[in-house]
Image (cartoon, rainbow, N blue to C red; front, side):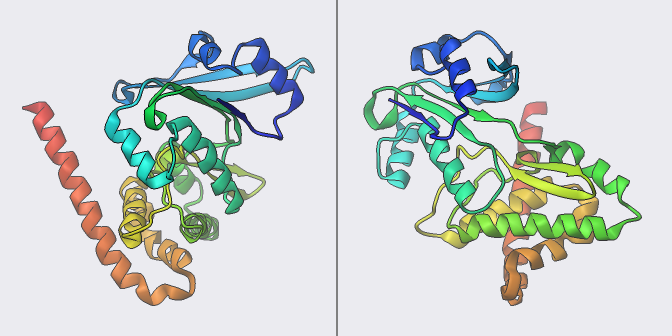
Length: 274
């Protein structure tokens, strides 16, 4: 099954067909682009490709390919998405849901999944790039660049709080809300933010507070320490809005989660050194 976004540029659609990226077999046979795979991605493979359409326009795209899925992953998606959905199909729909919530993100281009119980077969998705760079890489430089302009950092902080607030108010939780998955595009005195990597996002039906806290703790854990020390309370205020009386309750739960994350990271480092 192939699912394409209805508003894909006709020139880009022609490129996809030319490169064989509009079929599952073609996507998995594709050997172009730059491989971005990491050792811990297991059955996943990520590729960055830059293509030129017949009009001479350049498109930067990302291709994610998923091999056959483990049973436990299939059952997780079956419970949470009430259907036989592949990881590519899930991300395709998540991107659409995040954009409907008014959150800037990449554009879904095309996805495909083949047969298999509970979406266990191969699948792939192609998405567009977003501008800017990940906060994980550019956050500290941004803070240094504006150390004498607190109003710029405050605006950025409020935007970041609003982004996460919009995500959670739409009923969605990211599950990987690290600084590596929020992109900052700074131009003309404005800091625009984009949310990426939505493969694990979902709508929790129970224990919603727990999932929200997990997102917030991941962000706090991964942001520059100087920003956390100076701006976290302002961020949380923007996130909570009129419900800022809940800040102590949130902070307590978030800090417990951050401490647990740090302990696990320390244990992992200790075991690898041992």
